[in-house]
Length: 374
Image 1 (cartoon, rainbow, N blue to C red):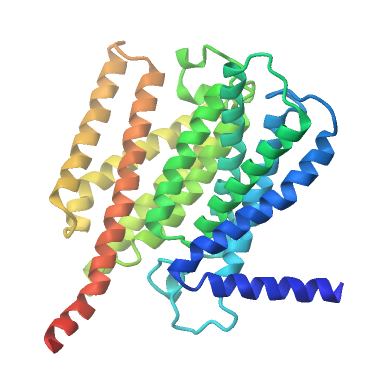
Image 2: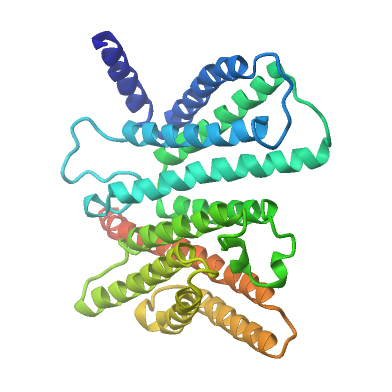
């Protein structure tokens, strides 16, 4: 037991050394992927035995790859976070792509991000299996090639999750959010037990009577947590030289946090069981978003004007969709789907814009000093 612990510590030290430079991060992620294949392939072969497997369904290769991929993603993400943890961290040493020590990710932030990676693996491999099932109708999968395919899926999952854990920044998190929302939404649509769900509304995917409810509601909950996480860290680098600037940053951050909380609550309270609460938080999310867009030029006047214009256009389109629904031209599903795409694409662009502005602001004093010396 002691020897095993010592070997684990030695391996962790090697990975930490590899993760110190940008050139070797790719190597560390490749090692994680290779390790997942080396472990996953023989175990999968032993489990499959000599049986023929189906692509989807209970006990299928798709189910095994999805569930196992979620476990691999969670483990790889955790190992990646351990790899970027210095053995003796300095009190003023920044980590990841964030501003500094006060803005380091907390355990609950990492839990939500790691859960998102695991959910992307779970829902993503489930979705890929569904597409393969439609492409190879009735085709069996033999044990040996099936184990190879599962091993490759585990390797790819470990590589992506480990690499993502090593390179966490507000911008990368915004990309993770976009991928997670798309994968979760399509997985819920593919697994829905009601093929006519779209005739009601988008929230019908989250009803307790729908088989897609776990995928849909978990996607909303984790997405909301990620939005609140990114809202704090993406705005941390904004300049706050005066009390008014600090208040503006707090209000902006608070608005985004409320949007994230409301989004999570939409998943917590399904529409068929908590109709009033569900509709209240869903409507409140849209209202807070519109208020934030209108107030943003005064709260953060340093952002590009084209970004403000983009927000106004989005709010106008959402209002026009409301008119289309009220007149019966669009059904509620179309309004919710388009409005959701607009709102969350704006949030992602906002996070990347603010993050870029914060980075520029942080580098400007050094650039000015360099210019002065030159």
